[in-house]
Each structure stands twice: as C-alpha cells, then as structure tokens.
Length: 137
Length: 137
DNA sequence: ATAACTTTTGCAACTCAGTTGCACAAATTT
DNA sequence: AAATTTGTGCAACTGAGTTGCAAAAGTTAT
Ligand SMILES: [Mn+2]
Ligand SMILES: [Mn+2]
Ligand SMILES: [Zn+2]
Ligand SMILES: [Zn+2]
Image 1 (cartoon, rainbow over the protein chains, first blue to last red):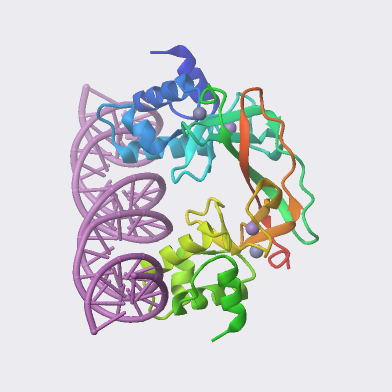
Image 2: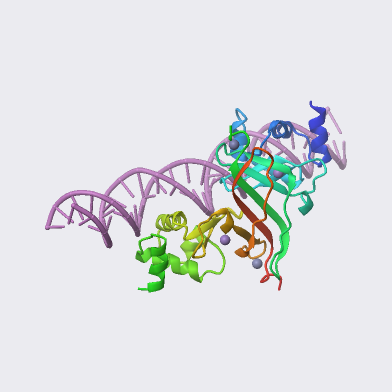
C-alpha cells in the first residue's frame, strides 16, 4: 500500500507485512516514545505477542531504539535513517513527570564520562526527568 | 543490638525494628546495588511484602536511593550520610553487562544538560553500561 | 499448479517484579 | 490496662514481558 513505509522497512531488511506497516505508521505519527501496552491500545484488536515481536524485530534491525525511563514499561521510538545505535548515535531522553511522555532529545548528545580505571563503557542510558514544554503551560 | 545500625536508622527518622536492622546490615555489606528479589534471597524466610515496604520506607527517608538500570528490577543502594537526593547528590551508575552488578560511581557527578527551551529539569538517571573492572579480568 | 518449506501471526499460558488488602503482632500513647 | 498507632506475614492480585504451539500467509522447489 504505502510505498514509503515499505521502503523504510526494506531499508532495514524487514519484510513489509500488513502488521508491520500498521505499527510503523503508528511510530511515525507518534511525537513521543511509545510502550508496548500503549501500542496495544492504539489498535482495536491486536495481539500483544505479535506487537511484542514486531517491536523486537524493529529494534533488532535498528529501525527503532528502546528507552528505559523507569516508568515500568520500556518505550520505543524511531531511529533516524542513518542510525546504527552506536555510542555516537545515542541521545538524551526526557521524561515528563506530569504527562508521562518520553521525548527523544535527538539534538542533545550524551556527555562524555570518565569512568574509573578498569571500567569499560559500551553504552549509556540517560533520562532527564522534569516538566515538558507542554505541561509547563 | 547494633548501636550503629540504630543510629543510622534514627538519623533518618526510621524506627529501628529487627527487620529493618537486618535489611540495613545487608545493604551496608553490599558493595553493589541490590534489587528486591535479590534481597529476598539473602534471607531464609522473609516476606516479600515486608522487604518491599522496608525498602520503600528507607527510600522515602533517603537512607537509600533507587536505580533504574534497565535490568527489569529496580536496584537500591545506601545514600551517604549527608545525602538529600537533590540534583547535587546525584551520581552516575554503572551496570556491568557481564556480571549484572550495578555500581554507584559516587565520585562521578552527572554532567550538566542544556535542555531545549520550555523543558524543566528535576532529576537525572544516568546509567553507563559496559564491563566492570572485575569482569575485565 | 502443487507440494514442501519458511516466516509470521494469534491465542493461551506462563514468569516475574511489584503492589495491595487484611488480620494479627508489636510498640506507643492515653 | 485500654486504646491507638505502627509494623509484619500471608495471600491474592496487577501489569509487563515472554514462550510454546498450531494455524495462516508467504516463498521456493518440483
Ligand atoms: Mn530516542
Ligand atoms: Mn548510587
Ligand atoms: Zn509533559
Ligand atoms: Zn562485572
């Protein structure tokens, strides 16, 4: 159906099934990160396990990345086209304490950290908690 | 029994019950952060709910702080004596991908972040993932 | 086109961390 | 001592995530 959805999926070596197109469309429309339970609610009648495996496939193929914001459910957001989820692709995330929305602050790189001797850095999860522009009214 | 345990508890306005003394002792002996399920295993016969409420009391009174390291279970570690869990008390945490231990890097402050206009910072959770000095052998 | 095979989906069942209600026990106050 | 508050133990439950399995859909070989 939608040529652009298929292109995005194929560019990450994901076979474009109907389910995957629907999920990808939701992710594209989404301005903030979304969790599996939230995703479930976006569909009248969708199977949790299928959505779960869809998200997993998307993440494994770096179409999306996951965010542990401490709210109990892992959230997911689209990667940009050239993202490989390497340290240089990592960015800060923001969780609003009021509306509970999680934002990708794509423009904000994760600052360098000098670990103690003997520690080796692989990745960083940085979540800033506060009030978002929307809730500050 | 142990005068020092009681002092620590009382200094945070926590009544020193037997259960709380035992839990605090475990937390003191612990070099890395511990989760509720892990804490449970430290006792022969202890009730999950009681331990849960003990940790909650400890956290509410800032005797311990919690760490969301993305492993599925929230971990807890002792605060230092003067800690108020204010932004200036926050530090980086390190999760070892091999041994799954979570370290408080008390000496490493969380770097300042310049949020986009309209966003207000309240706190930051920063978890570095990698290999710890112990597992790097 | 049919058969054989692979991949995806739907359903049900399950794990595991966290949480709550409730009754009893222990400690504190009156 | 009686009344009240606080803490504990047990059971039951929630909610996110995960898995096994069979049916459906898609692909490849005959
Ligand atoms: Mn992001
Ligand atoms: Mn810590
Ligand atoms: Zn908000
Ligand atoms: Zn380690």
